[in-house]
Length: 390
Image (cartoon, rainbow, N blue to C red; front, side, top):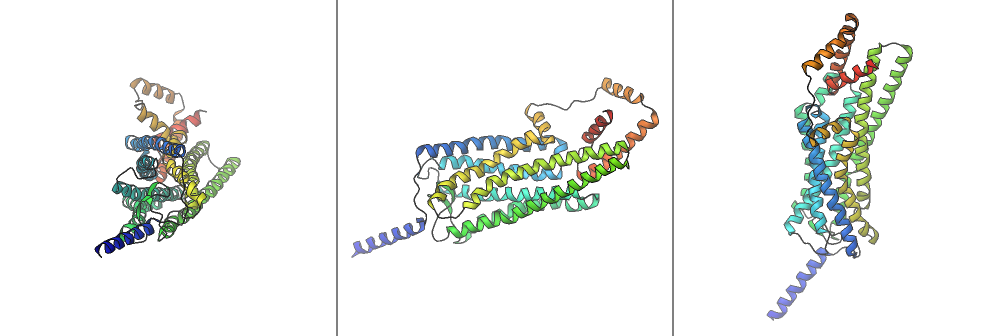
């Protein structure tokens, strides 16, 4: 009798385990070469991303001119990307085998972390887009400052982390999901159970993608329309001769700088959307093809975290110089008495009235714009002086 009861208990336990671990999608068998290629790709991109995002944070901390409102969100994005790369490094180990090689508690931590970091990256890109929209289209100094005070910036950054944390916490406090090893995809995300996997996948895709995509699209569309309108207005002033030569040169320099920075950030957003869209488009679809492609899509998604520092280093006008200073320990050249005397001699060659008027007009315009848009005053003045010499 006891033997029958024990046998019945074992059978019922096996039925429960089979139900919890079952999935509607078919079993996908991956070759050793496929596993090694995807794992090697994750390992390489995670190593590049860890170094690159560390360089971004170090550049902002070391170079004072990079410590602006926009770059506060850029640092937040770099931190999220850094943690994503650390998670991707561990995911590359988990993907090598059909069985979990890591401790199960570590796999759950990895699943919790990747959900938070990916969500934070999406939300931070939205915050950057809104910041660029306000910074470029708003001319009033007071309006820009009221929207981006230190307290409000801190609150926005906390919000970019808070929403993903809430989504990742749902499986821990309810039966709406279960974080851990996904035997179908061989990743540490959430388990592909027939009981709740499609619902949780749909929740993640809905919270992380559609609203943020609309906000990104609208923000950069408005920036594009404003820049086009401003460019046409500047060209009309040039033809009519309404503004002075120094003011025209200054306006062109300022507009060129803003467009360059915004274009760089727009490239970051486009690359991220290209990396994230395949994953969320395939998420939760039960088919053999999706089950085979989804790990590749997730590898591309995590690889995006190493791309942003490369974009900054090659495209961003400020980060390109900062990376050179940080990586090669270059210090800003300080003016010596000899160079100062040379500059004073050059200035003395100009008539006093002309040089004074131009200098006063340029400095006042530069300071006004720098206060409104948090731009390096010395850099803009240097660009204006060079343009006038040409």
